Image (cartoon, rainbow, N blue to C red):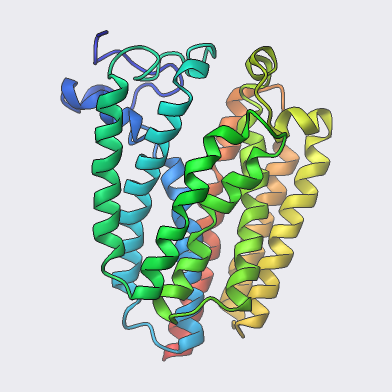
Length: 310
């Protein structure tokens, strides 16, 4: 087995490399705790829906605990999902410059060790899920099928980002399931808006690997759109803003939520203007900036919920 302290090429200078015990580093890298942006992006639709549903219920008493549980759940389940992704992609990752130093292709952990670690993370996620009502538990478990099939989609379709969107936007349904005990039209429209957002930002992310992906036959919307990526982002980011707006109107949101949506939209416009698909470092920075876009929308929804509950 190779040195467990060896760094991952696309994630250096982080706390895992400098502070974590050597034995733990490969596992923390498998779960992406060295680069938590994906966990934040998974969390954003959870928080949006929790705040919007609380506003619709005119009751924010359970919102703080829901926010905390969603935070824990998003980080551990994203870790489990990334571990599963790395297990299924271990041979492909070894052929891509940016990913060949990840724990599995570099031999820092074995496939068996990774599987055990994935199950441990999933059990923590289950413990979080069991804090909710039965409908929410069933809703959360239903997402696992999408998570399981996602890693294989880039082998068979040019649109793996849609499947990622289905998985990463599931939280838009969970907030309603937890708070209201149902999934209604408002939740479904919010879910659709979040999916459009995911397709947009993951297309930006995928532009880091287009050359390697072309060599090994991996498909993505980045390769599909190519030079037309900016126009595609106008479409998908525009759809995201429109659909989230429909969800706010359906949920009778007040002005703070609309202000949050306006800030969210402005951030997406800024990304489109700044984008240069041939600059991988810029693509990564723009992708990561979606955490801030999501938090702007959440801040508006949270303020709206508190106003309506007052």
